[in-house]
Image: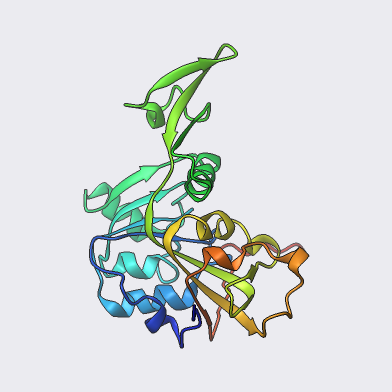
Length: 230
């Protein structure tokens, strides 16, 4: 099966209005910059985006928010995006806030074929509204469902033609569980290497989970919040 595609525009072919997408990354670390830019240029709308956060106003998923291409966000942290806040308060954007660990597990569960699970996080808060509650060892737990996505879009450090991926340090974050969870998984990589060059013991995502792969270009790798010590 030929998995290598030429670029991000070719990689996102088949994504249509109203689809659900998973997008890897944490803050601005490890986000699929090329594919997000291609989605912005595509004009595709009414997307449901599953991501740890919504980027910032002029980068990451913030670009899609600016063009009103996102209908719903399923996220755990959204505090750095003023446009996100404005659309939420104006009722222009549907938002499902999920505790960060629960969000990661909902993605992982989807990739592992687990339809639902119980978790204590969120009990007694707005997160628990409308959810089934069961007690385990005397502690209340909420029923959470695995997340489904038409496409999962991830970014890796290195990959090969089979789709095997290696993430670099903290850029692993949500990319690894999301890569397993999409019906179709797209991987953009900083370096596309020949088959056999990757150490099998170092591979984070086996190629069986990846449908399309390409070498990205012009990565900005922005820092969301720079902290300096004199």
